[in-house]
Amino acid sequence: MSEIAIYVHWPYCSAICPYCDFNVYRARGADNAPLIGAIAADLEAHAERFGRREVVSFFFGGGTPSLLRGAEIEQLISAANRAFKLSDECEITLESNPEDAHLFAEQAAAGINRFSVGAQAFHDDALRALGRKHDAAASLRAVEAAAATGKRVSLDLIYAREGQSVDAWRSELARALTLPIEHASLYQLTIEPGTAFARRVDRHQLVPPNDDLSAELYEATQEICDAAGFPAYEISNHGRSPAARSRHNEVYWKSGDWIGAGPGAHGRVSHNGERIAFEAQHRPADYIDAVKENGFGWIGEARLTPQEAADEVLLMGLRIEEGVDLARVETLRGAPLNRQALAWLIEQNLVTHENGRIRLTRSGRLLSNRIVAELAA
Image 1 (tube, helix red, strand yellow):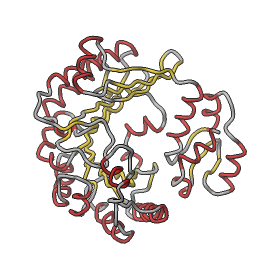
Image 2: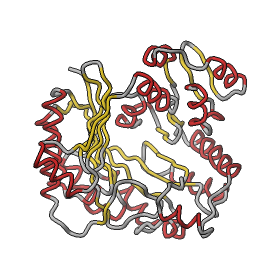
Image 3: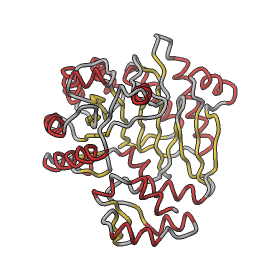
């Protein structure tokens, strides 16, 4: 039986962060049951179409899925197990806000075995600037609460914040890596179009770090993580060991198959020789109505061309330390990559090509999207 992953998007948040461009809505105390029922039915529809494959990873993302009570999480896990089959070693991750730490024990009892704690920062002024509701002390308590469940713990932090110095980030990160965690996702702040932060930048009310400072912050991140025993296995992700890596994200980076359920969720499935991309209805009410009317919640699907599928393999695969198999990419696209560009990138020490695999160097990781564009040209 071939493996698959499941991503469930829970779109509600108690507050909308000004840097967020995800499909999110403010939680207003509505009954969760209709959306939970729709997600369960949508998963069943996917299983009927693509087969009841073994699930190796189940990821609750959002939004803020840590708003869900243990009983609600258990309903969704049970629905996935009925529709598919969760492996005995299935990684079940919950994206978790620190203010929901009081729910962690019941969420673990419901089946969560990996908490991804969205601390984002350990300075109160930075948290206020990021629009977060919790303070630094709450972040520390949340990590401790997650660790107390006995489950795996990952920590999310945002750097390259306005006014942040390299020394301040070094101190903040070094402290964070002493916490009881096995994994850290460390993201440079990105100003996404349409967000409140983008509007502030346009009005000159927010000044992100320039490229040189961003590069310094990235290099400092790698140095601190290496010294603390958290080597990078992907551009923004660091694990204490191979076993600590995010199995779910590795499905994305290695262009595996995953089902996306919930408002705005995306999925990719290889079926009957085709690579199919799915997108669900965005608004929760539209998603629920679509499931009622059609049995599934997706707004549309597209069959990727061989070149589109190959470009995804290249784009995602170059993010990870092991890189991509050149022959796989060229076989998928039915044509060679730009070998002249590859030779130049190797000469510039931005990529390596050894044993049939292309990998980004540390310098190349800062330019990954541009490198992919050059290779695919």
